[in-house]
Length: 56
Image (cartoon, rainbow, N blue to C red; front, top):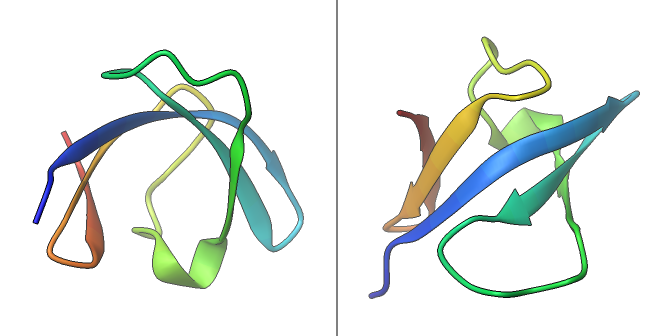
């Protein structure tokens, strides 16, 4: 399974919008905050691996 890296661009209610940093993708990924670590804030760097997100 691939490892993907993201940065939290913005938080809107129960959702966070993530921008992939290791690939040239224009669209933001909308993810329910319940699937992300509680400590996230705008600008937080995340790693997605094995179906889970972790702060890096």
